[in-house]
Length: 72
Image (cartoon, rainbow, N blue to C red; front, side):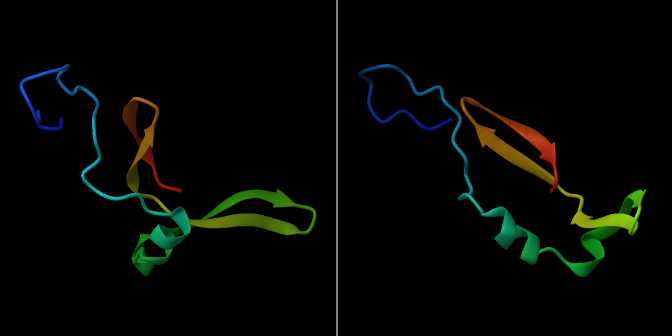
């Protein structure tokens, strides 16, 4: 919680992030090669459909309460 600035007024009660926001595409570029996984989603008429992604715990900061989420 932020520290109180004066003795007057309402005390601060909203959470504040200590780190600045990061764009997902920039964050993904900074992930090491060993963090990335390849997963086959399904077999399609044109072959297997697969995706590559890093699995990391991140914090989503929306509205009043931040919450943990899993990667991209």
